[in-house]
Image 1 (cartoon, helix red, strand yellow):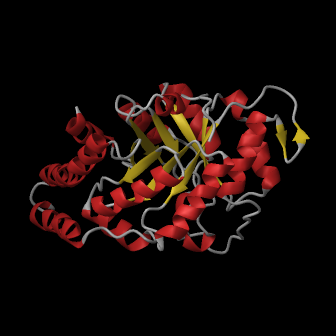
Image 2 (cartoon, rainbow, N blue to C red; image 1 turned 180 degrees about the vertical axis):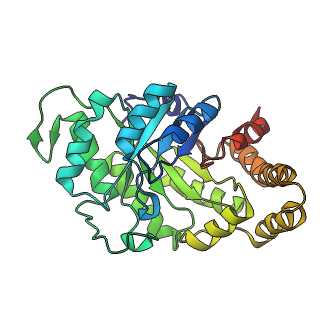
Length: 312
């Protein structure tokens, strides 16, 4: 981990601030108008926002370009996601060389989901020339030494802070911690975690990460916009299970209000999110167990204000 801060996010983490980040997801589209609108809606509440790179191997508008355009349009700092599933080291280096001209200061290095996870593109061939750890190492070499695998590049020096993913739901926990120690040694500046729901398991995970890596960790939370989203997330995301009682409450709200008052149904869904996630955020904040929260409210920016009220 480097202490040098190129981004507002890294600067805030160095200062020990409790930070919030958001998530933006470009679609299979030639436009990112909805991404820009979501970024404008959340920028009052977060210090930076991730722009996903083909999540679950479902193709979307190119992350590095979407990050640049959204940052330019909104003024909100972006965290450009870059994954190894689709690109060999030549393509990854080429992407990283664009960072100075695009004004990007954060990159999240990901191994990425196998194409088999995709609903539409399972026939695609994965690459995996690098993994997330070797990509983190590459980013830091390009930033600190001005070389990539020993070859010097010309032009402006790359100034990026690099994050990595963590999964508190992975088992056994010891194996996940070993992976995170490798990422920390490679120069990871922060971790953002997969979605969690159990506060006790989260605190146990954070104790291990904080002790053994010293890398600031942002805990991933997922406000669920509807019962359909909650059910789909429960079924489709490996290693993550929505608590059955919470899923049952979402189902009951849909049953009661879907054919009666859809606006009321939306309000009740939001209320359930705040009742469940608000105390979660408050406990992490009060105990200073994590460095912040990564709120994955994709296409759901109205969730930010009531959730952040919990720590004001």
